[in-house]
Length: 360
Image (cartoon, rainbow, N blue to C red; front, side):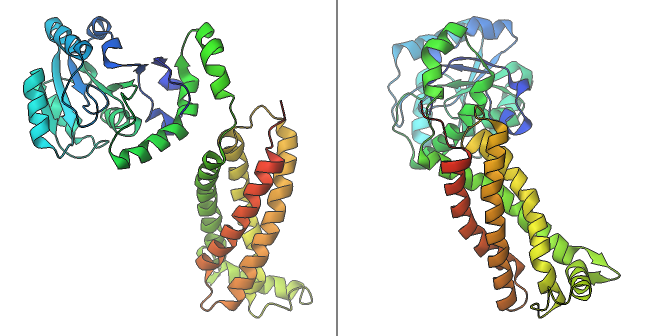
């Protein structure tokens, strides 16, 4: 993950997808949360995560700063509730007694259930509550889904539940977009953040992002191919058969190789579907996978389409061959095998040619 940043997020500038993961505010640690400011904003209910937010993972020894912060919150009149899906009920009970706060257990975050239970328990509206936690994928997302503002705190230490590490990796993929709407002093940005942001993404980062983008493009490609081949009908006949018959009648010499009309239509309709999917890939691989927005867009587009058109040709050849030899006109299987092979080609071509970073 990039260098941690504290500050307020202008969430309205994010698209709906990213906005769901964006907190209202981010701080280094719990005791940096400004209780006076929260009170002035009308917040009355503090919802707290446990591990790596108020105490280290599996631990029960609280720092003086955390204990002092909770004591001040009580003095100001805040109601405090721990939101947890832990299976260590006894430990949660000891923490509740030690801190003198309430707890709510329920479905795993980011389910809205526990947040709603807490609101009901304390008789508060969602606008009066604030969630404070260290995980974007559970604490922040869950609070946002429940309509509650969230404060994201930096995790205390690296030790944590194994599945949580998966969430951390997803956080890493999301932060580059979410940090773009973080309000921070310009001097801080220049001195602390720009070098980290300017780093070249690791190969693993790019492969994961490329796979996600490729997955969406594959769904678009597959869906349109299935629609063109079998979903649309003309005069009660599948469009693939109808169009293929027209091709064979119009140019019998060119399509004599096709044993059936739909085999003649397969490469052309697959090509058409791939063009739509190709544009989706260009947009997201440029903006997200390779973060190549500083490059010349026209040059990148020419190179991208050069790589991708060759990939489409390869895809069409593989798909058509498989569609012809596999029994029962296997559209899905044929497209899947072709997509895997072409994905390797596209990643290499885009990384080392279309979106290649300039040497500095």
